[in-house]
Length: 331
Length: 254
Picture 1 (cartoon, rainbow over the protein chains, first blue to last red):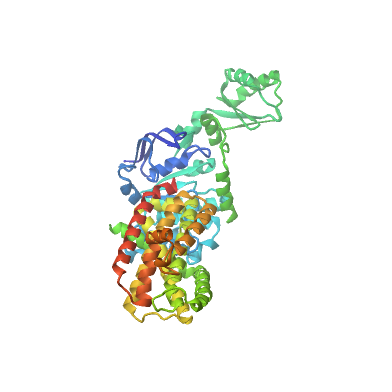
Picture 2 (tube, one colour):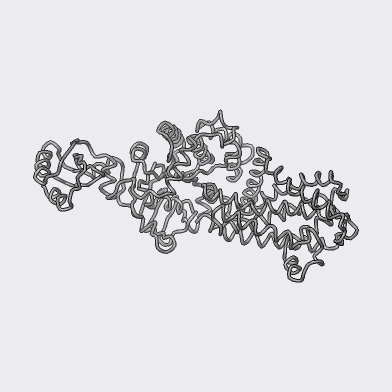
């Protein structure tokens, strides 16, 4: 059974901005799936279509076999969703937030208290359950939101940037609890992120999305493998390398691919030991001043750079900055 | 159907819990009606130029002042929706099994819950100022019930406005523009018959007039000759507003 099945999905805003430009995607049930992409790539739009908030312009999308347009009500019973922005009421307590959602989902009154206590326990919020949410830290608010999403033990959880704006320890806490919940109930988890390490560490499968299209999909290992054997990084400071120079280096037989990332020249090769002297010599004869050299295995950053042809930070808009700041502001 | 009622009730319970945690707004919103009754009402009582059907003027205007206070709260209730749209709350609600209709109507009636509390604060104040209410618990309950529904209707109107005015500042501006004309073009402070013809017609289409008339009959004068018409008008207003608000609910989150 496929948890998510998307075929040639298109969504435009105001008739001009193509947020999704023919997305194809299949996700198996029980998987933790990461949709990785820069801001504005279409991640949020895809999640909002799958949670039946928006209608696609064309194409098809199914969640556990239910059509997002015709059978939205069925999907809303088995799926839960945590938006990127804050989504809890801050002027009531954490316990009350969960209680209201338990009522919306129609949890019978004799089970409500247990279910709410259980979710609070799982997300480590027991001590603060009766405090007003406005006294919570950013990490606690996020955990409460995820507690809301796990309340009814859904078959699939959609998380939009689940750890945006959180410090590393809060991020880790969120993921540890999410992982143990998922291991216990076998819930499919679909999350958006622009943190490589998160996709790398916690997902079974990753899709890279850029400009409304899925450009590559696979497990972390597959993706890294697809880049090639090894990566040589040349740090080139205060020097712009011309396109034709890049092309000439790309032409060297040892070189599989070449990319620029900020002031780094990233060269993908089969075997760094034999390729390094050749590439060094080529750079020297082109007059490129190299400040530092390092060789590594490909990382997800390299994967991303290869397929999306852009760094992850590109395309940040004022709205994202504001959202992140708001969360950071809450500590 | 059961899901819808559940959703609506959850929204109202949310409001009750909010009020339990913070009652400041209820108290601050009581200041304006006190001014209307204690100062305007007392002074105008001495003028005796407005035909009130033998009722003391301050008694005559207290249902109108109550209704204005409640409607003011409702008209600004859309602000909650603006905030919930900016945060992720509405998006999350729209992804739950509760229907959009039940969310919108539930939120509107949540404003009605606030309206009831508002009324329950103003009534004792009016009593202290010497207003004589009819000592009929049945009438009183029905009046409070109508306050609940009329503030729900105006909150739905507010939600419709919120879907067009997506920022707080614009919303605040338009809210002010609506409340005072509604108040003045109604029978809250003077009978409709005293109005210039144009305002007279506006007052006839002003749902607030029917609310004031019903509450005045049930709480003060005991004149229930128009009660059925009033209830019908309020029901129609609510139904139309709920339908329009639900229909525009998609706009809110897109």
